[in-house]
Length: 96
Image (cartoon, rainbow, N blue to C red):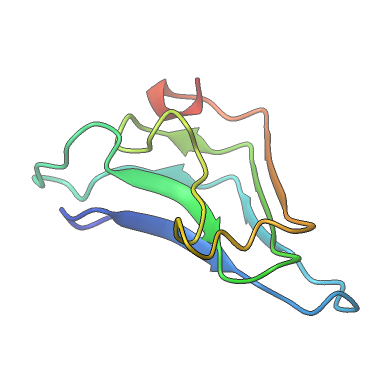
């Protein structure tokens, strides 16, 4: 469960020759019970570095996740070369 602050759920980065992924599978992404978190306060992730790879699948995503889903690292250093962010068969207001 997420605390009541703005942020990112993942921050992946890897070398071009690494095979790894972050995979969130059959999870629930929501605000902590009783916490007041603004709609769209969180992103599923942002790339820590080039070649980032994250998949979110079969997950219940509440509206605390921003409709854009993903974000750049920063405006001056986006880290978006060769990045793979994917979503598959998720449910909930944040999955739309």
